[in-house]
Image (cartoon, rainbow, N blue to C red; front, side, top):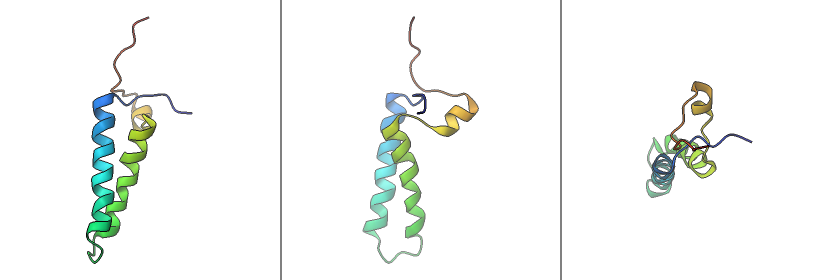
Length: 68
């Protein structure tokens, strides 16, 4: 579907950030800002898929260069 453009360190950071944000949704059930933490779905999914649509749009990649 999408080309892989997220490297291993970037991928790990995205997954951790997504999980932290989503966990805040459940840790603070009465907070007025809790629904903003659902944005954590985005880095979690891009980390799991190893593909970022914004990276593709701007022509960026954090993957190591493959030698031919």
